[in-house]
Image (cartoon, rainbow, N blue to C red):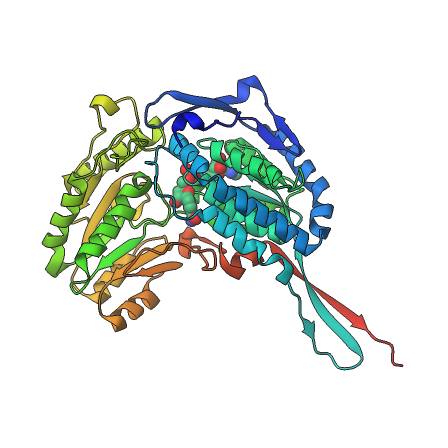
Amino acid sequence: MDVTDVSIPSGAMLIGDTWVAGDDAARRDHLNPATGKPLGSFALGSPTDIDDAVAAAQAAFPAWRDLAPVVRRDLLLELARLLAAHDVELGTLRTLELGAPLKRKRGRSMAAEYVTYYAGWVDKLEGSTVPLGPGALDYTRPEPYGVVAVIIPWNGPVVSAAMKVAPALAAGNCVVLKPSELGPLSALRFGELCLEAGIAPGVVNVVPGGPDAGDHLVRHPGIGKISFTGGGATATRIMAAAAIRLTPLTLELGGKSALMIFDDANIDKAVQIGVTTGLINLSGQGCVLPTRMLVHDSIYDDVEQRVLAIVHALRPGDPFDPATTFGPVINAAAASRILGVIDRARADDAGRIIAGGSRIGGDLADGFYIEPTVFSDVDNQSSLAQDEVFGPVLSLVRFRDEAQGVAIANDTKYGLGGFVFTRNIDRAHRVAANLEAGSIGINGFPPMPPGAPFGGVKQSGFGREGAAAGLWEFLQLKNVYVELDPA
Ligand code: NAD
């Protein structure tokens, strides 16, 4: 499929069965990050649009909740089929809106896998009975919250949507999905596919918008539960707003994950995975990506050289060109923010800069490209090592033994991911147990299968996506006591 074969969604909001164009003044141009040229404009939801979307979801809720489980299951399976069938199109839209180089070999659709997985739960939402003797019966009923607010970031809209919307729908909730104002196009297409799958209008509503729309949504009295993925500062505001009505929350937040390489590791594999996931993928704009590479002292120089070899071989360019291996960041504001972080790290002597550090010019000057940047011998106390950069900046940090390495890895407010590369099986599991993070990879980067729980500890959030735990985020347990008259 070529970029010209993809129809860009009209940019209208999906509210009930209607595509709402919104106010002209509230439309926003989205610039293609690779070229800096407008890709299209789309509506930003106003408070009234949010009210309408919540009302549409409330109206759809009783019928969706009461649908025979096998019917709800089959509707989700149809959505999964459509997501898989449109995977190339959705991937192309993602490349257009995020600038990430197009993956030509598309093996699996992660979004489809999540929807399929949760479709399988619909007819297995069992309660339990509580033994109370012959005089009484007591049983539980897992019940949906009603209307759920799903707020997602721009950096992986379809997967983020599927990870939340699939379990929410499987549990019998209806959804108001608010994609980020910075990347709503593929999320709008996701909404369109929900309708195409036969899911009733109003069950899934998609209203892109900025902080004001998000704030109005989380304060809305019609919202039973909030599931949020995004940054910690936003989460603090959402939690404060949710506190007013005590609306329950699931929070999937940022990270500063460490990837530890011990001297007995398969160094080649460790470095390749570390640089690919920590620097190259999405140009470092990911939550769980290992942006701190912790390297044992005895192999430090070797690892540094290997990192540089990979970085120097990268080909920034047009994300649709098969030769391109490195893409832009999301927009001009992100580019200047990231360059500011690099300048501050230089000024603070946070580490030695050994690659990159500037905006890429020449043919790519109109796009938002930052050179892949590596700091070596980074001080783990520096802001560079402590704060999420959300850009292509990798920090190499030295450690001398396991205890010190784990202490450095844990010396962060975040706790999303942790990765360890070693051939010592005892050490691998010991380190996995001692890392303060929700998701650990031993000698590999987890592919995040839907059956495995994903989420953070500390300031990386609470609650889980994936697995049964992800489903229970959208269910509340009712207990029913029945007193039986003696015969
Ligand atoms: P962000 O926090 O700026 O925005 C996230 C979403 O919240 C957007 O839809 C935004 O419009 C909305 N929002 C902003 N202010 C709001 C408010 N006051 N009330 C309600 N909604 C509001 O984050 P971003 O820049 O879009 O994404 C990057 C962040 O997301 C990073 O910190 C990254 O680590 C995190 N992230 C986490 C995960 C995860 O699974 N843990 C996955 C992807 C991204």
